[in-house]
Image 1 (cartoon, rainbow, N blue to C red):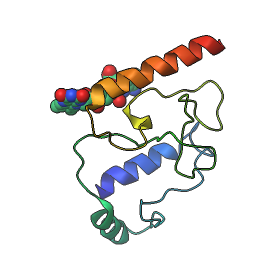
Image 2 (image 1 turned 90 degrees about the horizontal axis):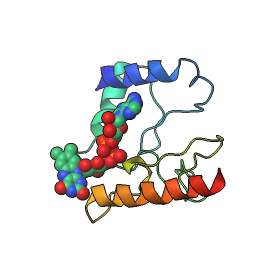
Image 3 (image 1 turned 90 degrees about the vertical axis):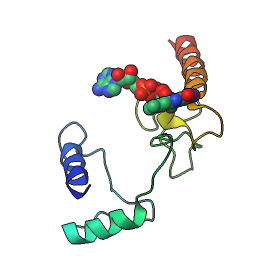
Length: 116
Ligand SMILES: Cc1cc2nc3c(=O)[nH]c(=O)nc-3n(C[C@H](O)[C@H](O)[C@H](O)COP(=O)(O)OP(=O)(O)OC[C@H]3O[C@@H](n4cnc5c(N)ncnc54)[C@H](O)[C@@H]3O)c2cc1C
């Protein structure tokens, strides 16, 4: 996982992502350390299993520091980029994820069609 995180950081440091990322931090607020030993400690502290992988780009209000998209799936700070998949669910839903994603995607597609 240390190696995987280093690879992801390497991707983030390439254009066009470079410059879009202001900081990388763990859920507990710790910033990414430079040493692999410290990184391993933070991975062990933060990693957890999850039945459904959702919510990596959560929907939320403008002032929510964790929000990546608004309630129409539009990515904050970018024009013309919408996300319509399980990543925008604010949390893992207590119901099946598949129909939840389909419902959200159809709603977002309708909103996009209304605007263009
Ligand atoms: C084994 C298993 C069983 C499950 N059982 C259920 C269940 O019984 N009921 C239920 O409700 N949910 C179930 N789920 C969860 C449900 O399938 C997912 O939550 C849901 O499909 C997530 O939708 P998504 O659009 O976010 O991602 P996905 O459905 O994974 O769709 C992502 C899509 O993006 C495409 N893609 C990936 N990378 C790229 C790229 N670079 N460029 C273009 N396209 C790309 C992929 O090909 C894929 O079509 C199950 C999941 C798994 C793995």
